[in-house]
Image 1 (tube, rainbow, N blue to C red):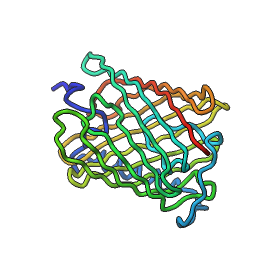
Image 2: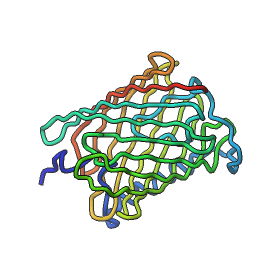
Image 3: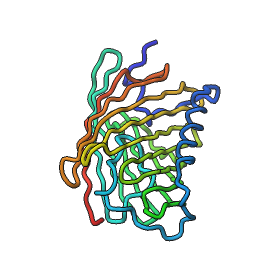
Image 4: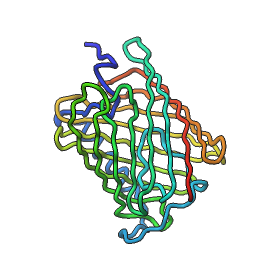
Length: 265
């Protein structure tokens, strides 16, 4: 039976469901190992970690993946996404946003909805840094996330998720990874992103995103794109996202994403 875009939300909006779907387990284990094994050897238990290095020395943010460590205190970032999705011979537009900042040196805040017209909930996520490298660019952070209904018919329940993020980064390349787990629905979703600097202002991006859980098939998508820093504090990105699993919510998606960063570094 054909699956329409309106019957399924974006990868974050519909949990994967079946423990018998082994690809979901492989995805979870793979993304976890990718993040944990990638941590640098010079990290130490979190006490009073250094503030992250200046954004000018960092690579660009991914398109859809959370940063593995919080932004610096007083630094703000807003990713605004325009989406064009093709599914069942129909093309539909949507938009998303991802705001993040550092509340303290060890606590980060993310407010996000990757497809506002489609997704029924908007998330607020708090990172709590447990491990951070000396330069403040790599580390490990457990998280708690609250998903608030922001669409008519979504009900009044606030979903609570737990998980963790990791980052391995320097001034030339960054690997960010995140896992979310919804205990009430026994659902997992996660993603990992690799961003590199190939010139002073050009950053190719590759991401893998997936979800799975009890009662639904595993959905995995890949994203490939390029971000260009047009001026200090402003980056423009374009990407293509497409499914690689047998189950899919769409056939292809284009992402246009301006990003704005400001604040005291």
